[in-house]
Image 1 (cartoon, helix red, strand yellow):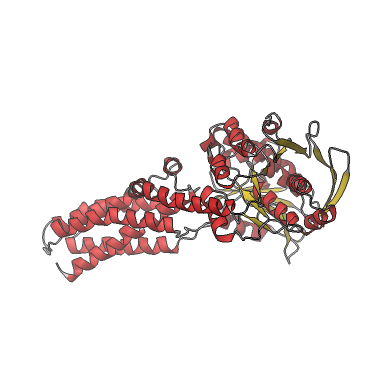
Image 2: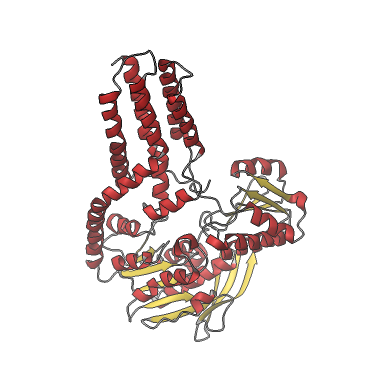
Length: 533
């Protein structure tokens, strides 16, 4: 075999392996679950543009338009370009090379390299540079075909590794349970909800840390293994309170986490139309969130948000249920009243079941944030934190990044950053906050809301109407919800000259650079994940 042919095979082999990186990246963003990953593929991702280019290469490999050496060289050069493109790709949430990813990547690569190497050995060693060049041509064609259906190799690797992953995860889970069992005085607080759970977690941690040694699950460590990792790597013998955020995309997810940490109390912040593509309907969403309430022991308590009808209508009989509300106060035990917003934040009063009134000041804005604060305050009161420490904790809370975070730029522009995971309730609240700014023009930049299944068009039309009522300029990003948003905006008589549609956030930024002036306020409502193209 010539050096030329060895070089061609080596370059193409590197591309073969590197080509799995985008597939495994999306698998990770879909929680390593084949069913979710397959749904993502069904949404137009079986054949992205880069794979269309590879199909064109297959036809080139099989054609006789070029002589064999030139044809092989051209394929190798394009493979080099594709490798460079994959390595230079930027993502909002990059692929994290966890031990699990490394295992999946290794098995996937082996599944692809074994047939590739065998083909080279048995049919691809020909150095004949004349004629059809059958051996090398066939090898390169098969290699390219593998890269087109690379997701099948990733799925096969996940399936083959299931027993291994189960054994490893069980070991980690048992170790986390052992740690928790060794701390009988530890108070575990579960927090879940369709939205608001991450903010509530931060608020609760800020308040309770005034009185207790607390640990909370960091970032988005709200999956079973994320919780397990938090316990195994961050729990200290002196930790008194563990605040555990619990995420879910399908029924049973919350119960799985509860079975690991055994929460003594909890908060359900909301039940709404989030992740309907995996839940199917709102009733399943509610039942899944209330898996937390069902797991609380009789001597514990659960704090639930009555502002959401699916929550208010769901009874809890196994433990003490404390209901709170900002708007639907009829059956609530705790309410927030006298809410006053100012440029410096918010003043509000918490009214207890006994009629006691406690006043608070916070840097946060928006009714949804006050609702989340109310839940955290209730838990603090139930755990015996003194009122003065609760007030101090509330006053010190910083705005959570990308969750209705208000900033002012040196150029006199106010930025309202609500770019994390938009939802019907939160987006409406963010727009109402935008609507209160009157000094300059109010600008909304949004791609709309996702993961709403058959409710997507209806809810994004509603979002469009809210935009029209609270913004002077609207910039719609991406095509995924464009039609519904534009319809909702224009149905309210919005000036079409102030409605802009752009392909991505980079184009939106370029547009804003020519529009913004001193005194303007810009709301960034939601950002699309890498899995939405």
